[in-house]
Image (cartoon, rainbow, N blue to C red):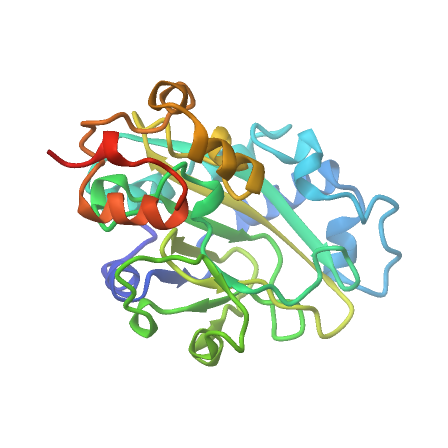
Length: 294
């Protein structure tokens, strides 16, 4: 098991953990070979920014079908479904009845459309139709696998420990610095060698930062979620969850219409007081009376 007890302890206290050199040299080398075939020129440029930029460098990663699971090859698929990624997610959820709900390559360079200072945010608005409660059985575990190393100048992801926010309900899901400076003042930048992994929760504030020098970085987002919960997962309707048109629809739809998209039905075990309050905050115009606890 590549996740040790110290990693689990850190995750439970802070909502994230970094495991350096998670991949073996052989796994990383084979992954590099497949990445070079999938997005030609990207790896070469990431390893040496003096090289020419690839012609398709501006392509948004998730619009390219070959950049999402299953990949053409064996190693990236094996890493995506690595038994230790599943095992760690199972520990977090308290059971191993899981599905892999996301797996896609992510890459950017200095000047790319994704090269910007993001707001501190939570990811759950496009990973669940409802709200991520503290009820462990519904916990999703997200990973960022680093296929190239990241230093201070290569747009490191910044994360903020749970210790710096004790909100009863995590809403809103993003903040500008002047509105909640403590999230930014207490952020930790993830600076790691290639082959490392960042694991984080849907309840963990984080953000992308901008490049400070020429270069590129390549990684993969992978997320595991409990199965049997159709309201979870970025590959389903939850992917639309952060669009206003979808929020408007949820607030006006009938109970039956929401259920057709996987919304937890009235009486489902999901509905506790925290879930009710969280969904009410996210969808203030929604009539929640049918879902109220009896």
